[in-house]
Length: 339
Ligand SMILES: [Zn+2]
Image (cartoon, rainbow, N blue to C red; front, side, top):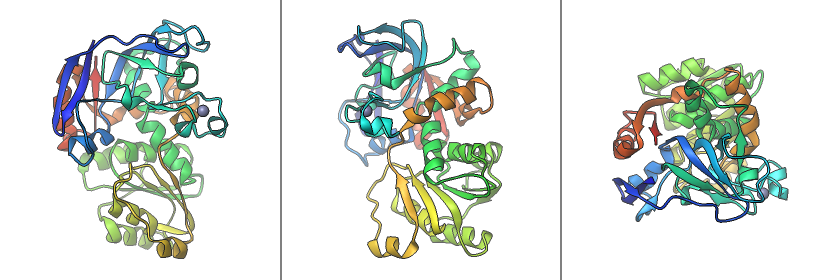
């Protein structure tokens, strides 16, 4: 099969690799219907994170081709969506809703789903079958559920977005934009999106943002305070992962408010005295997407939400390198790859 490999920072190639097989009795093998490039794939691409001939990709939807003898909940022919962490969904941590910290977890990026086929460990716990074979038009939205929608959803949930709340979202990538959609779906009254990019501002408004703030950092946080009677937002999503973004999120939050942080943290440090002084709640990390998948699939299937609109460029898997370039140069919000 063909699979995307990052040989070194900035170098993405598509190589012939052996077809995956069922290795464990709990595995499934799927044929990818669609996969994509993640904002987090840009960290190694830009050399911020080490990379050496690494298989890439952790988002996936597709059709089950084979299952191990212990797999009960999915079968060959099912169309499935899974999270970027494989999880058993039965351990104490999973049952509490934190499948991304499952005691048996495997990160799908180590297997690589920017490929024609993929082995999915712990298939019963990881995969959720859709009610039937989706129309082609639903595939991008189902793919979004695999990570960016699920992650944006967790961020809005962790920030306690809900009726009567003012929610601010730091980060106008796919996750931030879908956190806007999630906050709208959760009934937030006012949704402030930080963005300087006209196309992303437009999408944020379509997903439910009521206000756009172009200022960044301290200035951006001040602007949110001005807009909320000097208090700050009830709920703030941090979907970038830099020091500036985290500080912006904390300073934009009112005392007693909540920050949901899902940007993959790179050299972020939070001074203890700041944390002590602000009186806010902080919750985040790798999103337990599996917790939300059944509900997200239902909302997509019933066409109540259309998160697939974050994909603004579709390329064949063979042109993955161009997909990475487009995202690196911010010419595309998110790139869908068709195997
Ligand atoms: Zn578990």
